[in-house]
Length: 419
Length: 166
Image (cartoon, rainbow over the protein chains, first blue to last red):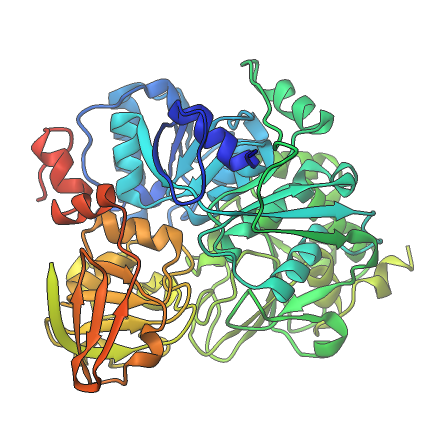
């Protein structure tokens, strides 16, 4: 009986010939990422030993630049850790900074077939690179840094066969909302993406699907490797790797088809990401106070350039705060160079520095009482982005940009068709 | 590890932001515990007594990697029994030595205020007053051993690999 991508990597990394759902295995960890929250005084425990400093990455992303004394203290502790152990891959506030999951893409930190850990729940984002990546707890990260290994409980796998090409102004976020709306959570299970439709999705678009898999409560999210993926990684990381394909007779909990060509813009209604999707037209006209583009799921060059295309030559509606947060300094520089940032600025957007920012209600766009936000970030839980009485709708960057122009939830196809 | 206590009952998909909201991140662990369910059930944390048991629905603990399990433990809850646990949240239950049991049917088996008995090792859950016995799914032995040992930090402390708790 064959294995899925996740099962094959678990077997390879644990030295077993076979791993099946229900097995608990100990595996070596290739990459351990720490970020500022790990170093907050309430979380941090001083580490005396590191298994291999070359496997560690440190970034500051959740609270950058430091909005509070505690956040600043976390950065002080993080810099001391980096110095103590001679960590080379350090993304301090400055030229190379970014959200950890974007840095993994920018710098090719996740090699196909490898295991990557970070104590941010959206670490499954890196599964776009045909590897096993997942968010774990803070103590798991300290353990993995010290011991070089961790444990995983293998779950069943759901495979999504993507076909077709997305229509204009419909994005991978809409594909995710379609899956989350129909199938709900995938707790204890892995998600595997493949099929002929993958070729038509950029790496950035695929990464939206793997990052958002955290909202499905998936264990691991993986993409099959193709030439575009191999080229992306090879251009950024000289290390050798062996991609992993599922076996032809792999056993899946379910195989589900998603025809990208028939999708339309969707919105998740407030308070829950899963089982909560509606076509934009159902809530079109809902007034918003804030429109937000950013996060590990939708702060890429593709996302910012799509938003710029929609707002080009137009103005953000009065009474709406349109906040755009590039996911990394590299994305920021690239979108300045492409002119997208200039277009957004001219339209009235505020550009925030690369940070998780208001996605987690940390800073840079937190919501007040009874405010309504349309966001392209990762979560819309009650109180997630600020006051518990605020309402957070979630959609694609295209829908967010179009809605910023009108001041109400708006179908982006109304604007893109005019260009 | 066996527990008997008064139960509180919550529904499906209870997320980590409800258990440990961002606004409590900078507070002490004890203060953080007072913010559990602050957004959806204000004042609840102040009603919990040491030894109470929390009953949850499907996918309990969905969301972020934050130390939500630590807040439930610090609130004085003896244990959690839910229809199913989110995978990341379950890791933190193990990490912070908060006993958590997955048990199908538990949500319908209890009304708030009733008494539960829970055997963490065998995953047997009882509502004695109503003569209900449920068999949950025991945690893998490797992980139960970590819970019994007090979680990851005491283990690493004993080996001198992290600084002692200050």
